[in-house]
Image 1: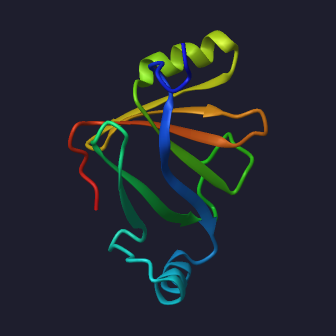
Image 2 (image 1 turned 30 degrees about the vertical axis):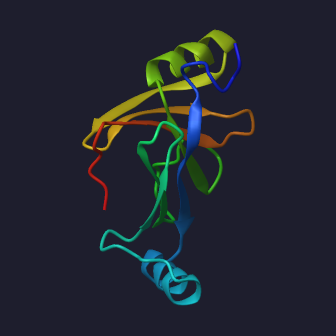
Length: 135
């Protein structure tokens, strides 16, 4: 089966999250220098359309430099991947022996689970609900 047709795969980058010494100042810089539309919550949304015609978003968001949200990853950033079938993907990763964390969330945006890549980067896997509350 082609990787592009199997269930349980990444469909795109859902977000880039990184530590910043001054989240307000870095947001101001990205707004003023690059034209980001910084929302009240401190980040920006970039809409796009998935292959299946559904809407997708890439979130850009700074976190405080002392955040523990990226733990146990050892990088000052986290990558969020939009996935089509979280349960199938988690089963696949566990079958491979990858480090799936015992951490999951259900929010108004959808379901989230976490895995570390071989380099220690925290990946947030996101299966959005049909109409995620973004913005």
